[in-house]
Length: 556
Image (cartoon, rainbow, N blue to C red; front, side, top):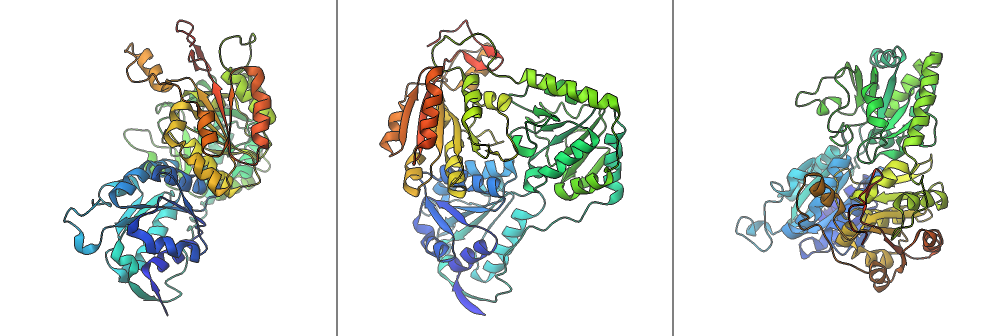
């Protein structure tokens, strides 16, 4: 038995559960915890805004599978953190949000920056509670960490009154044991066989793979199953690294930016395996897949959680770790021989996907700014095979979603929440976790302006991301919706920001690219910089998407 403060207990519990990074804007309500984190071996990064801190913590969890912590003070800090908490929930990312609360004797008296943190911001998390009694600290930390890692992972929020952190408790080593993710039971062989039979007996089967495949480390098993059954694989939206994109069985990513071939091929499937995906609105093309006529199987940590609001239930639902299931299915299909017709059809499907996802066909671009598709093609050529890409929200992201090919070593981080401002903080976190890999953030001018203050954070902490800002001087996605619905262009036109100058003012390298021919040398120079680098890429606002160039609008 040993005495320690509650702040020390929390820090040690985090460290024993795999937390290596904590991101914060410091506040007076959790000074003891700030002091305890480094002592427990956790690196603390001070950011310029709690939203950036929360995005960084989410990115660490998404990239490494290990939770990170974000800390903020009272209502104001929690409010800023909330965008990252929501993103972690949407991304199924483990993350610990710790919020310093007012002293217990002030609760309910409209104290400075007080609010009910659990009832408000806690609703965005998977689990939330307030630690009102120091004697419950060890149990409550165990409950929080277990909830974070069990089933579908997600963020948890713990509100801790300032005076509780300073109290001393006596806790045994057993009570301080770290919490690890509880692996679900192996799938029943009969359930695996039912899924295998569904795919094997179909003429036009398909697999839709989501983030659970990456979380389980199951990509290689998915490749083997696809090869043995001769079944094509689609990646769910913003999960492009679940399957090597240069594989002959890959047919693209669903959702925004998907090639035109994706939805028709999925809807005509006569058998569909959904593995490691919660079937979100975007990933399913507004819930149009699985089609009503398609028999389908769902393999997921919580397969029943997404069968809601009238969606037809799967023929087979398997609650299992994706790797456990896929490895069992691989063993079961070792002697399977696919019909020749399926092999031939798959080759045609793949060629159709390649044709539909090429970004820079056609005549030389002579308009103002950089051709966004050719920028992505150049990026593909220049980047190292193990580079990590992060993306923000915005129409610029349709080009990499359509045409960037992620290989076996590639990394990707993106918000399925659609949150703007994610790309730069995520790239900073990725660079801290993987300092020897190239990290490139793809951002729009609207999104990067929301978190560009974190460039100073990157410089200060030694992160070295390269940031590409596609600038069309508007909130392009919303402007597109306005035009599609015949509405006035209200509040979507933006002024000019010299993002390269902002980068230089923060101590980073900054450059501007106005023509296609300038992009590759500027990109190579930015990647070679031994510090953060930003390229301000001029983009003709008439580029709406890879499928739409609005020639009726002015090109400036």
